[in-house]
Image (cartoon, rainbow, N blue to C red; front, side, top):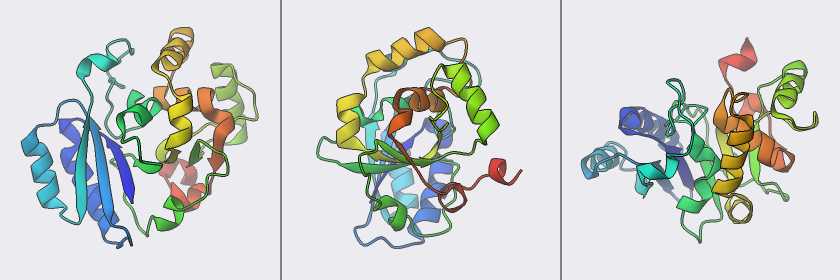
Length: 220
């Protein structure tokens, strides 16, 4: 099972905790964690691997200059590392192995309480993403108005996403993402969720939030 995380050095221990919650449930094909980053050291990676030997940890290093044209705020730095809003989630396919067909992205603050295999094996049925929404109808309408998209597009929660990599390699371009950011930069609240919802919202297969991405927002 291939897993994707986007982190910086401040989130190494949080990633370890997330992985420890995952490997409690054995996977028939084993676990490979792809760590997208720009500042981890070899020692950081070695320490995480030692802490979670049940999973193979592979780095996908991105040069810091890649994100220089992406707007940055104190709340959402360009490499947000495990919280909704990281820009990495809207361009990740280009940094992963070409022969990889699917990968499950998880925010590093996710705690897994059951096997991920059921979600990981789901058929895409033409979708680019399999994910959940935490937004009720009224707020979905408000988000669609804010982003300039039709009301039938669900506002995605990017904390747990299964990615259809062959399709995303054909669709995702940095130019499209930057053009959208330039056009809507004053309206972006949760950048990664806004971008993926607006650009790929009609290609999202929704799943049950209570089953696959439970959060305090749903229970509030």
